[in-house]
Length: 126
Image (cartoon, rainbow, N blue to C red; front, side):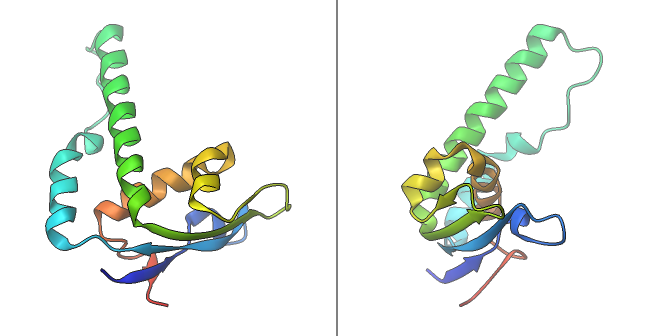
């Protein structure tokens, strides 16, 4: 597997709320295809107005469970973490810290979704 530097969106631009990067391993192509097939439901269109509230809630619950599983799968591809809030209030220097500090939840989802695409477009080789 190839090691890449991954810079979360929250670390980019004038409105950045964090600074730093993660070192990740790009999953091999066959594994990415398996993830794409398994988690295809995450790309479903939003529910329409004719769906019952019960069906909408069930769809949302299923999507949250898929995101949780995908984020869990992505953990094995994160090799190192160096993230910090711009104001210095919170830091993550380990994978465990990244997974336990709520301020980094958006990063976890971004990493998981990028993993499915092999981290293309948002990472570079060190």
